[in-house]
Image 1 (spheres, each protein chain N blue to C red):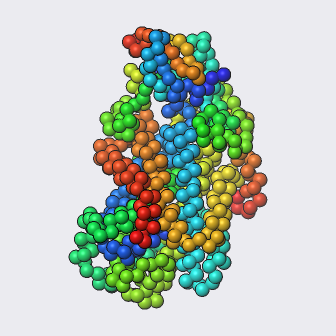
Image 2 (tube, chains in turn blue, green, yellow):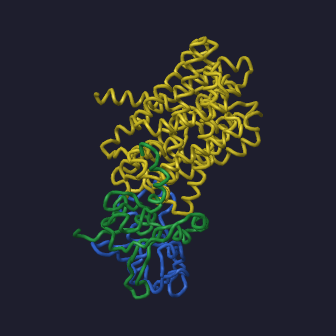
Image 3 (tube, chains in turn cyan, yellow, orange):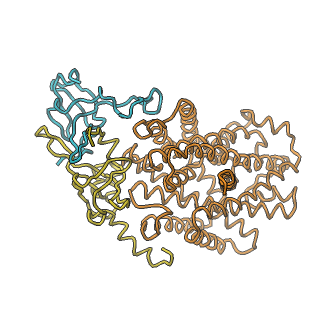
Length: 91
Length: 115
Length: 408
């Protein structure tokens, strides 16, 4: 059984081994009955941005372009997240 | 709800306050149980609450889990009514077996006049 | 009651409630050691607490989250727990020091033994919390604390060199004892920017159900209340600078502090000073005690609040009760309250970044705050004070050790 705490902070690599960063958060879609996981947010907001300089205006904390859609995820567990090589272009 | 709402699990759900149907605070979201990751249909299946759950939340979490008493309570995601500032639940804390720490502590307080 | 009157009364209570034992000790000793040269630091501290509390109040009113909810959500369980533990340790030290201060003031007023008065003080506080509605607690202790205005009168009657006093508001450094001077800078800032006051305020905002409509009131409350409270700090430092500095006295007892009012104003000055100290410090003790309980309850998700019946928020009730009991144990060991106060202020400064940074983050987060997130002005000040807080937090303990707690 995997928990969200198992995935937050683990490394994200492409199939070919390129490291993209770490799991900053998981994006989900909330319907009346379920919470579907739709993507993986990699890296994170720059430190300065988090403190307030140039903070994003929108109400979405993570800009959508930093989120890799779950369809590109090959494997996700405690050891790490592996995504397809073309994951970044597909946003 | 017409348009599905986007939520970030770590920032928008994890560690948030749980509130039952009567407005009673009954714990925080200590972790989330995920299902369907391998089958390509990932979803949050349950909210996990309780000291044993803290073991997965870092070194201080393990220490806290060691010291505290209590069991893990699994709240199936279907029990969630709404996710706002707090996570609103459909049933009372008692029905979901939450907030029992306060129930246990009540006997220490209720004998005092004016409580 | 008209809104204006309500506001005025709230501000009066805030002024009387601004001064706690840390302010008393550091402002008076600073005045005795460096006369008026540290007045500018008090200004920085007062502006700092205004910035900090306005942000926390806004976060609480808009997102309905008090400080420790925001800390756990933002820093996560592990780091958040570290922030909680350090906050609770500081809270306990501060509470014990305040109870000791109360007992000393009571001893000077009544002549009864110190140890007995410690118990009397704690029991009185517990009863006040249990029986009085919240607004009454704030009023009783706030108005009583206004007696400290006697120090403003005393400061004037002592005929300080007002030119020197004015000069003290200009940022400066004391060339011959820079380290001791720096230690007092750190101590004064720590005494002004007390986190427990902010936790307490933000929890109150959530309890009272403030909404974005109340944000204007939030700003006024913070600015006027703390600003005028800062005036009390100035009075303490100026009176001490006019009386103790020329005589080379370094006050180490609460009694000596009260003399700052007795010498120029006689017995009535002494009485008002002691009553003012008793109520200001007593009120601060209640705020500290509650803020300790709020932090625990908010971090772990328990039910909390004065608006709940004690039996419905059992763990929260037990938390503040246990804190009072632990404070009793600590102060009963015979530890000097004035020394304990200095330690509490310094440690509070060291722990300050852990609770300031998450609030700055949350205040900037549009998904929590909507259109009420930090504007440019709030961020400019917020970041300036982040730097101030970090510098002070890093230098506090080295300075305390190097200067032997300001003894030089």
